[in-house]
Amino acid sequence: MSGIDDLPPLRAVIAEHGLSAKKSLGQNFLLDLNLTAKIARQAGDLSACDVLEVGPGPGGLTRGLLAQGARRVLAVEKDARCLPALEEIAERHPGRLEVVNADALSLDPLAHLTPPIRIVANLPYNVGTELLTRWLDPGHWPPFWNSLTLMFQKEVAQRIVAPPGGKAYGRLAILSQWRSDARIVMEIPPEAFTPPPKIRSAVVHITALPEPRFPAPAKTLFALTAAAFGQRRKMLRASLRSLDPEIEERLRSVGIAPTRRAEELSLEEFCALARALDRG
Image (cartoon, rainbow, N blue to C red; front, side):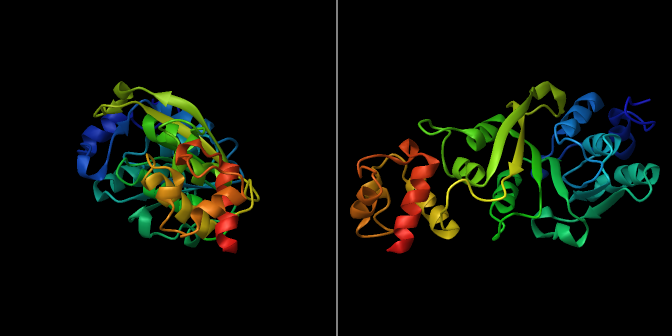
């Protein structure tokens, strides 16, 4: 007995299907089903939600999501070796688990899921940040998802929730905090994984806000933060000159000294500057 269902323990599943983790796919498998169930609980009540899971591997978190009562789970797995193990889970939960062999970067989840939708995943390290930025900048807001419960390297998780003034504060913090609430809800040590990574991991829970925290044109805000943090050691009058030859005047117009640096600006100040730049 596995503790959350009557399927075999994950170690046995991995051995049966020969599922050694592939570094090229950013795989690190969590074998403790109590831990995967705890991660699933961080997503809240799933009984009225469809859930998107990316990179399920042998299905530890998948089993936790189903045990947590998810209405339906879409498991998107790029590694075809994992499909037989995932199909065994689907057979135990008729109509509640759809397994798709695809690259999550090219899949339209709305073709498979019905809102409300939550995303819960132990993201592969090599695509985790790119997927997050796509979900946080879908081109329109509110997004198709209500919340994200995602595992990252701890360093990435800290960048998502970072306040101004430190090295962790950057574009990812602005992108995450402008239109959502983000908090770290769990930390996971390397020894919980197979193979154990060299770093600690953390689970971040992100809830979409109905409107941005401060008004700003998205395209301008993201171009602004890219320029500012792309040369974060420089003063803003230098790092932002490529955006506007009158950048010093724009900065002063919103009460920002041109000698300040990107990591010193609050989210509200970035939004104010984006509005000023958009006005020209």
